[in-house]
Image (cartoon, rainbow over all chains, first blue to last red):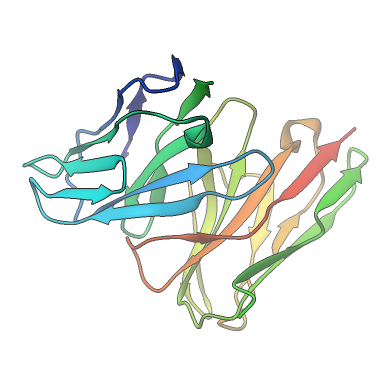
Length: 108
Length: 112
């Protein structure tokens, strides 16, 4: 059974701080996605990483795919209140699964 | 382009009742799936389909049925609702397996 473990589960930080969220698995994935979900809505895609070691940037968000394609990280620089939400990693082939999520709260 | 649509948005059922949650997409996506999300938890896969006429079980399939007669529609049926099925249900679609998922707005279901 494939599993995606995310850490930390909860994160409450002040505006302007940096943070990193991790997504780990014992399985190898051909690609991995990160999503953000806001209350009352479905998850929305942020990025797809495909190549081992790949780094992608989306404004203040930096995503990295591990060399062995088993893990990934999301780094946010200078967090803002608008970054508040649930961050999910997702991957799989026929059975597409999600990590347990990291609930981020950025305080003004 | 409406994307992925789900109906109803909210539903209250009594234990033992049955109902169908509707899901449709207009992006010609082959892959569709149903997830449930419980408070403080991530998304758990109920059933998925890789194309019309093909469905398979996910992580938590018990108590749910699906069918895929067309590319566009993927309804989820609750056979005999139980309080443990109280949850938020999301339908998603993707152009193929292992690729980015596009989600509907969700159905909030309460079983009393």
